[in-house]
Image (cartoon, rainbow, N blue to C red; front, top):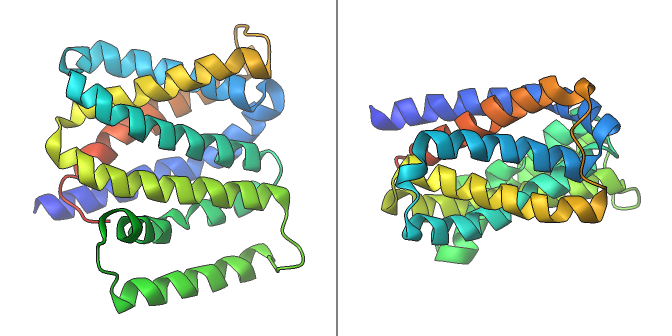
Length: 229
């Protein structure tokens, strides 16, 4: 039963993430990639620390450092790519994290790949090429960046499958989002002079910071305790 609940929860999280592609694309056109990500994850980090800060153990912070670094890389590549490609292409290519995850699990933890995994990988790549119009002689920069983001998200899932059973879900969620916010806050002055985000992006920040980050990553971290990659 827990496995079914976890699976349904992750489907809901995926739906929320899919809903945000157009929202984020419009927001970064106004505020820029790094400033938007810094504000988004600062909001998410403040929420999870307020809720579960007492569960931020040293062990969770150590695990969260690696998870947060990979997650930050995923969001940087994905959001950067989203600014250079269509929301449709970004969503389709990001979806390849579902095949990147078992491949990463194989490389990191020597997990055996089934024939179904291998077939799904090949079919997904062919499907992506057909749907996005990708060809070896025409690889758009935005699509390539988004693909790197999908790979990073796949690695994150593989790592999360390894770490989540060893830690409290709320503490590990808080640790990840704190580290992601720290990374982007340090990057913010390099990309653009820090300032209060424009009013035009406040709605996007609330949606992505609360629903697509704080809530979504708590659900994913909790669900990953009961699911394989």
